[in-house]
Image (cartoon, rainbow, N blue to C red; front, top):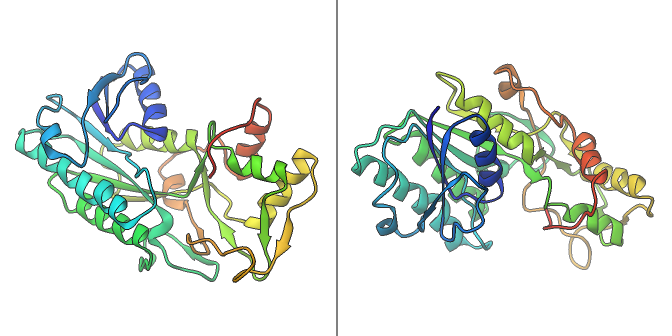
Length: 291
């Protein structure tokens, strides 16, 4: 049984907390408004952007998961949550004399700027041009060079219960395919995000970086057409990218390899988007936040 802090206990953190509790661990969920955390999770009201609220973290923490996410898409919010927030937590742990066995930081594949369908892995170049990737990469460096052992997991597009906006857009006929060369997407189901983090926590010495994506980088148009077929609706229309048409995604265009995570022994519950979205389509109702 370990004493665990989940800083930024939101979509991923809450699901992780439930699984860790089921294993018998003691879990604190830190967020500004901790009301509504799952039963058994010990609430900790604090603001990651305000170091003064982090002065009394639980003692004897053995693992820390930093799973925070900004509430808006802008430069200031990304820096505040990912860079400043992580620094505040690390400083608070150090000033309190804590020695966690490992800190886990959930990053993103936006740190890769590859745009022509290249394959990427943990050793590939990271040269982001958008502020989201820049701040994420800065936070990764902060975690990996910090005072405690750390592991970064770069997650692809997260979907799962409560994040079915793509399904809803296809159903409503609002999804659009970009004409032109293949546009690859990389995904991971929420339950595999949680499963991978649990799995890596069990390692005595995990590596400091993993890619958290499923087995199949998929063309966006393939995913959309597959969903349309399962829903029994017309396939999404195709539009030219650029002015007046569908825009290319800021996430770039690359194919992410999960070989290192698989080699560690992790077995995916949803190896492809077909498995994950198929499970969601079997449940009702399907309404939620877009991803």
